[in-house]
Image 1 (cartoon, rainbow, N blue to C red):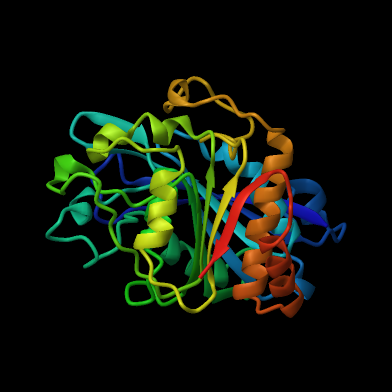
Image 2: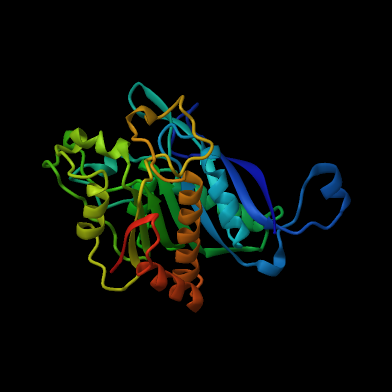
Length: 327
């Protein structure tokens, strides 16, 4: 399959310059035609035979460039999905300018949590999706009622917190790697509290047993985690009720916080807190991509064979899987 990508820029209406611009990269299944436009400008149409395309919006970790997740975007596009990554430099906290997934800090406080989404970039990204549906190589090829939110670290958190059809009717599922909903004590929460999730849509939480960033950040939450995966496991256990058999927790043996990032960037973020991975990170990434893709196939595309594959994965003896649960 041919996977192509193009760039867009969008303005965040409620953000002040110069921090009101988001740059998008849109990956999609393409169909080479040999046209003059294709040859001269590299503009390749979407593969209409695979349309309408479900859309994945991926939220990066703080100070993690979107290029770190291009490998995943390509793999998901190869499965027939449109994938959007983006870059937004903003001042989320006074005096702290960073590459951000867009975190609405005011919506994380005890008085506001759960009353509005925490993904501040999402309204802008959904508006841009509507524009893509009306112009360009993907015009008329998108399923605007089939949006999946995904992300890494803080980006994963806002993805799963904002996967709520009350706020965003087009959103139908969510996944996250290296994310949890432990409450920050500086915002006024009691120590060790896990905040609830909307729990209305299919959800896949993925974590790594060697996640040093989570393990070494426990002081933010007034706790000492027994294991690197403790807050991820507690999020699955306490933040959702389940009962629909479409919520999953996948813990990867030997994966660290940045196992999802390739190529790895040592210059930004907090990689110095991480533990070394103890398994092949290429194999771990392949398993991540397969699990995410099959999860979407099963619970968004409603493919019976994908659901059967997930059921088999639950009872498999794969050495890369520390545990896999569903509820």
